[in-house]
Length: 78
Image (cartoon, rainbow, N blue to C red):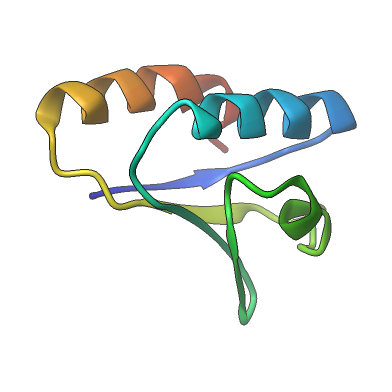
């Protein structure tokens, strides 16, 4: 499992993040306050409070996928 705090500042950031998340077969959740949404859903992300850091949880068990995912999301980490 991967957990991180991320920031998505622009619409372009959101689009890029969803494209990255969609490459992976495992579940990825984003949590803001009491709301949890699928990280592969642009509409879901727009329902979150984007002014605050967002908690990411990726349900990944494969170490190679975990390392690749962490490298891909590094630029979004708060």
